[in-house]
Image (cartoon, rainbow, N blue to C red; front, side):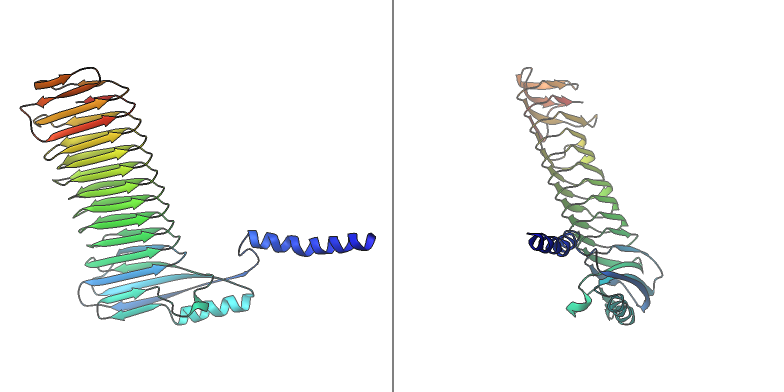
Length: 329
């Protein structure tokens, strides 16, 4: 019995650290860090592609004839010597490819130099740059390039600032922020918030579970959808589709084309420009409907449902609320 007990204790002494090691992933691996820097000459608009697995990407404007790349390397391996060897190899042979004004960063062909390796990039590029950036689980910040900009992340935040063309951003579980997009926005997140200000052109954004805030400048349609979260849109001048499963919806603007607004459980407030005419089709299943502007024509007017026209009519404004009030200002 004592022999069996000693054997059991020995097994536990070996097995428990193994289990803990599995649970903590790379906790028992040795670490090494390093960096590299390269300057690439260009002579016109740049096409920039950046890809990293578990590192971050920062892109900002620099000189007109140079792309400067700084890479921060982090490696984990079974021994410090092997980790340091990987760092030295990557620093001496950074994953940068250049063909004229097209630059690709982050493509590592040998699998052993991808395993347990994280590289974060800081890149200065001419303002006349198109960007495609992809991270597996790292944040992205892209600023001051003309674009267009395409940014994707598996589980990281994305921030794009001051781009002259369209922004297309998508993340599996992270927030998206866009400040000043010159030619529209397409954005999606599985679980996170989306905030976009000073967007020229059309907007199409969706969130599985998160809040949406959009500010448009100039004419452009807006399509906004979230599974569970609030929606706020300002300056809409075009068509509108806004839908949430559970959350409030607040919109201000001019319905130049049809508006469709729907929430499963939440209030709806629409603030129309003082000269905007439209046809109303409003219904609150378990709530009330209130309208501040005068109706010039009416078909149905009740506490829960209104159909009529404001200022002689115009594009249809259709609103549905499952459980919440509807207000038209």
